[in-house]
Length: 193
Image 1 (cartoon, rainbow, N blue to C red):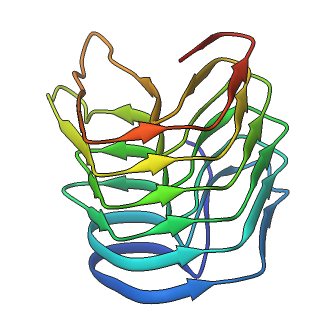
Image 2: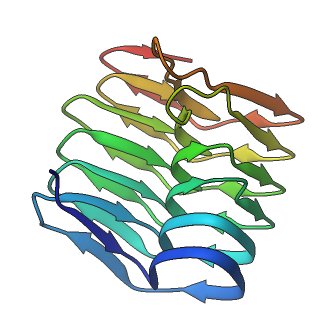
Image 3: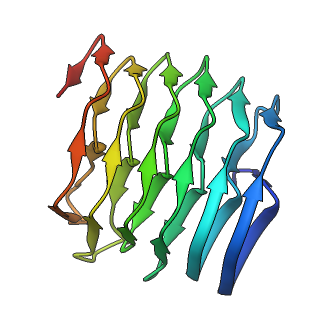
């Protein structure tokens, strides 16, 4: 078994709404347990609207981190949200300005201006770090009317909107991107674009 931790104003939320808030300060994880970090660390069946993150996020070990949600799944809708905080990691993980990892999530009218700097087998995206799918499912994640102006550096996969779409022999994620753009600089040791 693996240990997991949830770090944010809301650690784990399954069903409900998070609306109309601004978060200031710093979110830092030094735990070697897998950690989900954001305004909402882990969001499932969630509606997140008009939330703005000004916190800088820092993690010393592998994590899923985003300004709004570390991981979002199960038809979570994130809309009218923004991230201004920087994200820094010295270990592997998945990092996005809005969401670290998404499974069947919709992100609309949201943007990132914070810099993301990650190393050691990591991937990062201006809006979402990685798109994945549930076991033995074909799940679609949708990103519309979003943009990134933050500079991104990661050791493996870097994308102005999405860092990686991760398929396997038993899960089949799909990504729909519409009316989005990136103007931040991209850099890394692996693939980026």
